[in-house]
Image (cartoon, one colour):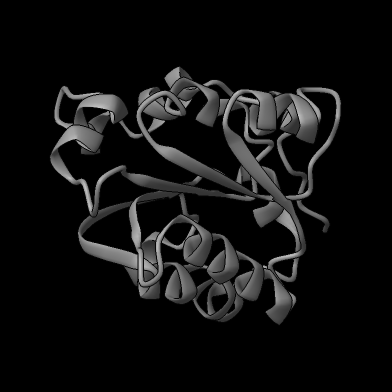
Length: 167
């Protein structure tokens, strides 16, 4: 007997504003918001923020106080890469399963300041986790561990994951 999955509007999740991220991560934010958290976890002159598997729309709300990098498959329904750049959000259109993705992230970090690290890293990849590919091992090896390696001292990680049993 086949199991049915609940239909989800993935575009609505993919193109979410920062306020939606804050709603999802509210239990971890302790009443704060991402802007106030960034003032506490600076890892340099200007905080660096990473969001994975995103359209980048949510980072527009942080770009006045942080250098922001969005990584994933950009879809122009929300904002084009050019529109994001005009709002000080850099977008790297890449597949996180490719090793070149993290080289591109490292290149961006080096452009900010050699040796720099992220103050805040986050992801809300809901729809992608319905793919058979994103099992726990691939999730850790291709997303979680590479992100942790690039998180600065005192940096904060907000990762949505369906793998509660392992955490």
